[in-house]
Length: 134
Image 1 (cartoon, rainbow, N blue to C red):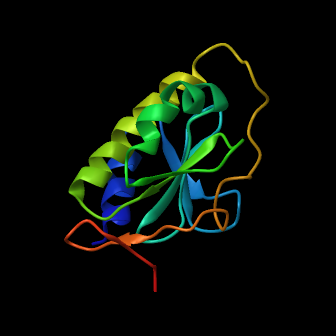
Image 2: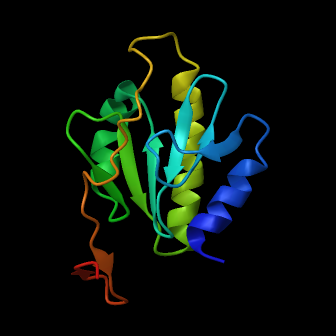
């Protein structure tokens, strides 16, 4: 079982989320009653809808994580799953995303414009050095 499959199975068990096809057309998604929360595109890459407000609030913390990729102007962040800690980070960020979407509306509902094909994720080797993806 891949890390993405394990994370998706855990999220499918959350009472606030349901699973289905990602609106962007690639992979599976989990959604709340308000909108899609995450797109599971590959065995390692998940796009997470944090909202623009949450991305702005946590941007400094997100940029120091080697598992996170930000696209300027996007309310989605890409989480690259290489280890169990990355799955834990994803699950924590899904909780943040759910909370952020429960806030009073400050922005229009997101379109299917997740970050798929908009980021390049470099693989990490055991020494912690980024390597180009195959």
